[in-house]
Length: 172
Image 1 (tube, one colour):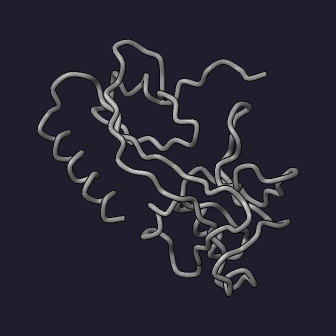
Image 2: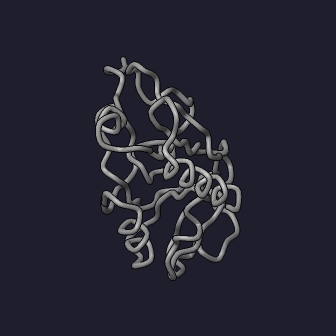
């Protein structure tokens, strides 16, 4: 049985932020049920890759099959899985470290502390010492990036930010 529907950070955005960039995993549901509904624009979709240390035996391969590994993840909640662990992984994953931001997670991978998942959209941010690999033998995992803002006319700053995000997402 699932718990109550989670309300992302978007209710706070209604009072303090002009625009929010969200990442969704399938099934792609609206971020909240507040009224008025947020204006959503899909920026793009990205496949999920595996980030491994370049010193790992896995780094010499082009693709990998998931096996018993030490994972680096972001803390989850009771209703959400850990971010950074391959979705649908059989059994209970072995979590070696947790961190709240991508930069820390990726530097832990570079240091050889474990492996994690990374959307292709973050490939330019991968530090030295990390190699990205495709996963073989399972469904392709995708993430959708969405720009959310309040309804109504957008300020010139929001229009320019949205344009820059669309352009950068298309480049990736």
